[in-house]
Length: 161
Image (tube, rainbow, N blue to C red; front, side, top):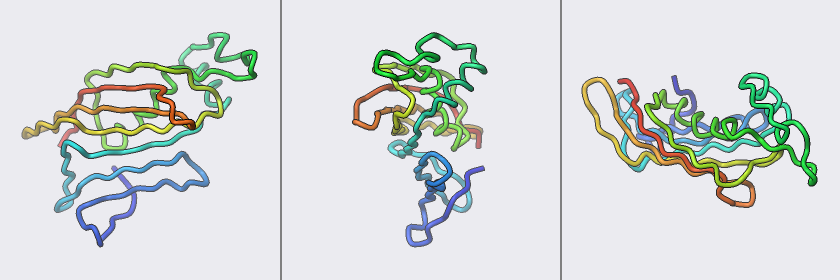
């Protein structure tokens, strides 16, 4: 279930803005018609998150990915965030719309470190609708606080009707 505020002035868009004081920033827009979600190519969503040392430690415990670069600071005092932890940013966007990924191809272009703020933009690039599913492709691009591209992801999957 998607929660947020419905803007009557623009009656076909649903906007959600997270409480910025307590959680990462989330922005997305989904078309709504007669209480039914409409998915179309070109729709966009964005999620912003800053990773903490605790995030890296917890993910290391959960995944077993405790490489020295995720545990011990480098010569510049930085701890690298696990790649798959970074990949939770685009998967969060999919979860917001109940997207079930069938495949995902991620390209990790630059390391992400504890304290980095990463913004991920997702765009639905293709949608085919049948009686049971929206079948779609989504392209995602993640940048750090200095607007350097850190990861891209392409995925294909479905949303159940």
